[in-house]
View 1 (cartoon, rainbow, N blue to C red):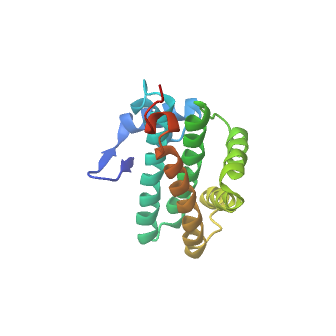
View 2 (cartoon, rainbow, N blue to C red):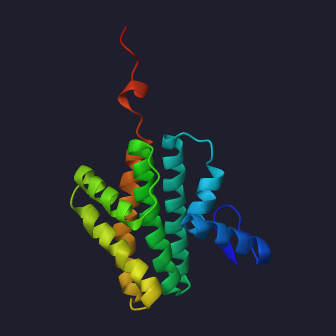
View 3 (tube, one colour):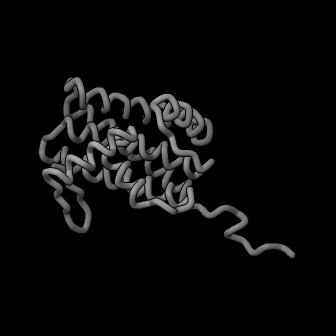
Length: 175
């Protein structure tokens, strides 16, 4: 079973939930990314980037809710997902590229770091720590809260980049 927060909650159980999870795994997606991909089919890469970063913002909110319930592992995994979707959003926005591996995530994190600054490294390493926390169960609530602050900055900064209109769209053309 999994749910989605926002204006309303959708809870999927049984066969449908299992099928979505299986399809996502076959493609190497998280469930969140799979749903974003399905729902954004046919969009141009810039609009797809916006969908990805909005999904990352939703995951941040879900992480906050999980923290409030004391569910450290789920909060940690939501934070990892938010960071990964943010880097993927950046790749779509920059070059229309869909990232398919952890290696590509690291490559694009470095590109993002070159553009925004060294602090991106700290945000990314916090996200990696949250991914490990989900599987290894080593972190505490304080660790998740600290990581959340860093990952929120990453999501916010990339969302700001993506929302800017290119110069040729925002100013009248000179003829």
